[in-house]
Amino acid sequence: MSSELRDLYQEVVIDHSKKPRNFRKPEGANRSAEGINPLCGDQITLYLKLSGDVIEDIGFQGAGCAISKASASLMTAALKNKTKAEAEALFERVHSMISEGPKSKVDAQEMGKLAVLSGVWEFPSRVKCATLAWHTLRSALDGAGAPVSTE
Amino acid sequence: MMAEALRESGRVAALDVERIRKDFPVLEQEVRGKPLVYLDSAATSQKPRAVIDAVARYYLEDNANVHRGVHLLSERATQAYEGARERVQRFIHAAEAHEIVFVRGTTEAINLVAQTYGRRRVGPGDEILITVMEHHSNIVPWQMLCEEKGAVLRVAPMDDEGQLLLDELERLIGPRTKLVALGHVSNALGTIHPVRRIVEMAHRRKVPVLLDGAQAVPHLAVDVQALGCDFYAFSGHKLFGPTGIGVLYGRSELLEEMPPWQGGGDMISSVTFEKTTWNKLPYKFEAGTPDIAGAIGLGAAIDYVSALGFPAIAAHEHDLLAYGTEALRQIPGLRLVGTAKEKASVFSFLFGEVHPHDIGTILDREGVAIRTGHHCAQPLMRRLGVAATARASLAFYNRREDVDALVAGLHKVREVFG
Image (tube, rainbow over all chains, first blue to last red):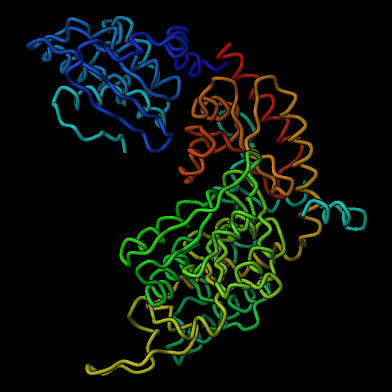
């Protein structure tokens, strides 16, 4: 397997895509948003249970490729009990890491498990897959009801 | 096509594919360190040098506007452009050259019919019949028309193999049906529809038929008079020609009756500020300077394909289809989507739980180019109960080795996803 492919499909990515974490609608969810990637038909519904400014619970449902599922799964794991502001900040860093690659100011080493998404930048056609869940997160935090699209 | 191809393969000289591949410069390259295996011809086909040279020669030697100049270059350009129209006429066996309208592609051809013929003929409560297998380009223009006119879009169903249910289709042609519009060959599944029978069904009820031939013309000989269809649309770029050029064939009587679509130069016979009279066919529908180079390139593509001959092309592609079907069926967990008896050389498939997009990325790293996604046929995907498929689509320049490379690539996919 080429090294780029191994960067993209790291074990953690495969694992999260096959066994996505928080793949459910959380009890008491009070925010949700839908995200679609028209190019490949990925669809995700993200649910948040916000308590004040804190994401008390988070989950998602939908269908998509390994990258979009793993990204959504890792995101939900990273955001539990974070504040809205922390979530927004994480969005910025992840987005920069995925879309800018080595040019990004974000050091993947400091991103914990999310670092496994850093290989995506080498696959321009897959960046949208990896960022879908994150754009959907933003939409859910904004409380805007309309589905977000990565197109 | 299959049976015919088999029958004919006995007496048709086999294609010399290795020689043919030398005519396609783009195929002689490595991508990502591997020889390119191009299996996405249903999205767009590669171009032979003859086409590239014809376009270049026009710009290098003859470039001028058509139907206007008194000078020699304009005469040469006009001759080449109209010569391309005659090639198209012969290629699809139209009765008259003026029944060939140059447009940008299949999409524009269908929109032209919807916006002229459709707007004039379709009223509130009328119906347009399409099928569940249509490409978005043969759905959306009719939806827009129906929306505008208060008309109803009806959809003929298919079976699980991807074959139209002809009895159901026939039942859906009713007293309010104003047009039947369907693909000749399904882009997503490769199904070759029995369009001649469908045209007969529609004509018995005096309903005209538009055929979207974008996926048919690269694979089979088309005779619009034998098919009896009223409109036939296709794109140059899927027929080994340039992008930006396509064809609408329409029967003379219908084209005559239709109002122009776009206004401008070349489509008029005289203009005053009080009144404009339309030019004759086909110029009435060709407002503005056309894609002259594109038409010339398309003419060269038709010459190229015609020299190979459809009996030989069909025999070769049938061999690839049979070989590929067998090879893919050997792969555990792989499911072919679209297994019609009459099929073009297209493999739509699902592979275990692996999303098609991931399949596409891994194959790409092996040099194998396929399409993944909904293939601009979202309603069909819904009918199949899938979000997307992977699709390998072959043309006459493909070989059994290309199928082998696809199979090897799929084993890599299994390695990655375990």
